[in-house]
Every structure is written in C-alpha cells, then in structure tokens.
Length: 275
Ligand code: ADP
Image 1 (cartoon, helix red, strand yellow):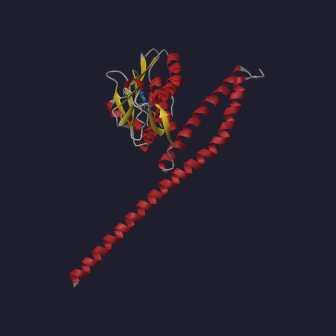
Image 2: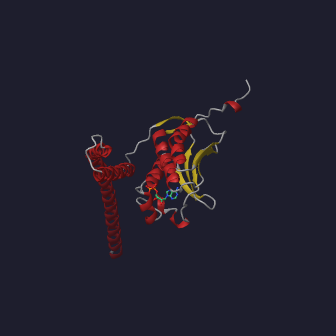
Image 3: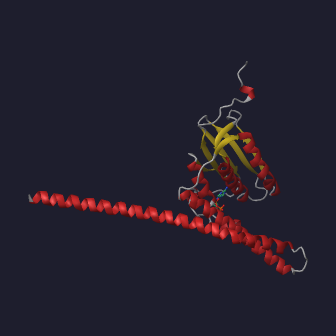
C-alpha cells in the first residue's frame, strides 16, 4: 500500500511538473507574440512622423529659396540621410516582427520569369555600371516560363541579394552575375559577386538578426544587418531557403531556392512538340 501511495505521489509530482512546463512554454510564446505586436505597432507609429521629417529635410537640403548657408544645407542633408537609414531600419523591424508573429501572408500570382529577370536587371544594371561593375544575367533555357509565387517577396529577396552583391564589391571589382536555373522541382536564383567574400566561420552568422560579418566593414558600408535575416525567413515562408557559398576564391554566391511545384509548365517555343 505504501509503495502504491509513493508511486501515486510521484506520478502527481510528474504531472505537476509537466503542467508547469506547459504553462511556461505558453508564457514564452505569449511574451514573444506581445513583443512582435508591440514592435509592429511601434513601427507604424514611428513611420508617420519620420516621413514628415524626411520630406522637410529634403526640401531644406534642396535649398530652393537660396536662403541657407552651405553648413545649413549640409546639416539638412545629414538629417535626410540619417532619417532614411532610420526608416529602412523601421521597415525591416516591422517586416521581421510580422514574420515572427506569423502575420506575414503570401500572395501567390503567376510570375513570368523573363519579366522578373527584366525588372531586376533594369533596377540594378545601372547601379552596377555606375560602380564600374559588369552585371551579367543568365537564364537556363529549360526553365519553365512562369512560376506561381509571391512576386513582391521574391523581388524583395532578390533586391537584398543583388544590392548586397554590388555593395560588397569594390569599384572595378569585375562583375555581379544573376543566374536562374532549375531542376524541375526547385528554382535556383543565384547572385554571385567577386567582392570581399565572407569567411567560412561567418557564413551562418550573417543570417542572424543585426549580425554583420565584420563591424569595421559594416560601419564603412552602412546597412541594418536585417536584410538577410528577413530574406531567409521570407524564403522559408514560401517553402524555400537561401544558401551561401564562396564564389571560387573571390566573393560570395547567395542562392534563393524556391519550390517549382504549382508552376505552369509552359514549354518554351523552341521545345514545343511538332504539330
Ligand atoms: P546589411 O547589408 O544591411 O548589413 P544583411 O543582413 O543584408 O545586412 O547582411 C548582413 C551582413 O552579411 C553584411 O553586413 C555583410 O557583412 C555580409 N554580407 C551580405 N552580403 C554580402 C556579400 N555579397 N558579400 C560580402 N558580405 C556580405
């Protein structure tokens, strides 16, 4: 009898411990949700006044009336530049808190791959050229012509990867290459650069929030340290991922992988079956 009582007591203690662990897990989950909601609300509240600051600082920096001294114009320019950085940070925090709170939704549409590539090329080729860099694009001719996915999010990720590739490649640093390939199941959008590269021990870290490969370099290049974190979370939300490798002995290759399931398998005209 004593033995069975002791056993019963132990069972109860175990049950209590389990209930306590469940309660704690719930508390942590709730705290994390509160944190994300707080950040999302705060980001909204910060954006409105900041937009006014940016517009007014830009007006002052343009000095249309010609009433300001050079120093005053320079101060207005610095206010605008710092405000722009702050706005980028707020937008990134808002995106991150949305994904983490499970509130980021997907809006899948049919995307013509050629059109997507054209948009990215149109946006970044001039930026690369300005920096004395080549901008190459290669599209596997066997890729399906279109895929069904959230176009805005794919563009956001591509913008982040390509702008980083240009940012971290010094002037005249050869070339940035955007390539799209596929194996029937997965679309791979790779951005390869011949820039400063990322040491093997930093390759996981750069995907963590606010992490930059090197604090000295980051001061030189600016940025929020959130772009890759958000990009990888968005890629995973779409059922894909982002990988990072060295580009031979110079630079990096970031690859966005996306499932091709649900794509419209339109054969390219050259492989269309004979009528
Ligand atoms: P940000 O560029 O705003 O700092 P990201 O999350 O996009 O933030 O990138 C994090 C860090 O990863 C960068 O600060 C940089 O150290 C490193 N990084 C990203 N892309 C590249 C690249 N193409 N070449 C070298 N380093 C890179």
